[in-house]
Image (cartoon, rainbow, N blue to C red; front, side, top):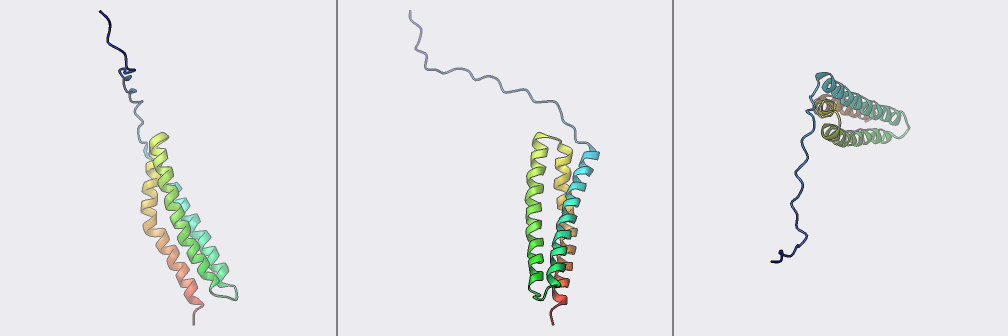
Length: 128
């Protein structure tokens, strides 16, 4: 008797075994929260500096550039925290990644509101 024809079908190898458990360390989570807070503070300081420099020029419309820069920096910080937080959770230290996401979520409630409020106050200060 002859064997049936082979069509290139084979049994796939078994899936890889799960890696070692990676615990989430509290110190790392607080480190990630600190990184997100630091990013917020830097974004606000850059925006405020641009508003102050723009408001001291002859054209008060230049102060709005700092306000728009602040909004842009907040959007960029959101994207950076989201990307780096997810990558750190998936591939590196889950505590830092989780901390970055938590830190951005908490800091976005406080820092940008204060920073944008101060920017608007400085811009409106020069208005008659």
